[in-house]
Image (cartoon, rainbow, N blue to C red; front, side, top):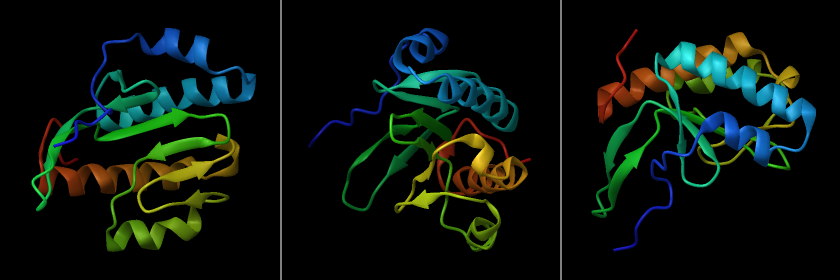
Length: 145
């Protein structure tokens, strides 16, 4: 069975942002996301894998037998966009997405060029909904608020 690359690394989050992010706007957005996600998750930021800043943790197990641990909320300040790992496919989240602002999306990731392109109040609601979903479906460090 393959091992996941997204594991807790112990790397310092602040050092990571300063060394990895070369765009000043993206750096400022990263520090703002750290503040917001820390507040929303009530968890300290930690590095997961080489480039994901995560908050909280949960254990998942798929029907295929694959299992592992992942952050409850997270993001990565990638060159092309901020990649947000905050989405759970719930009815409420799907109703909130059109109000989020300018973004692209894959199955579970939301991509934004800069934080000012989205409504952070809506992002908070999506994050809280995701925390609620994860706490109901997985063993996790999160608590329903």
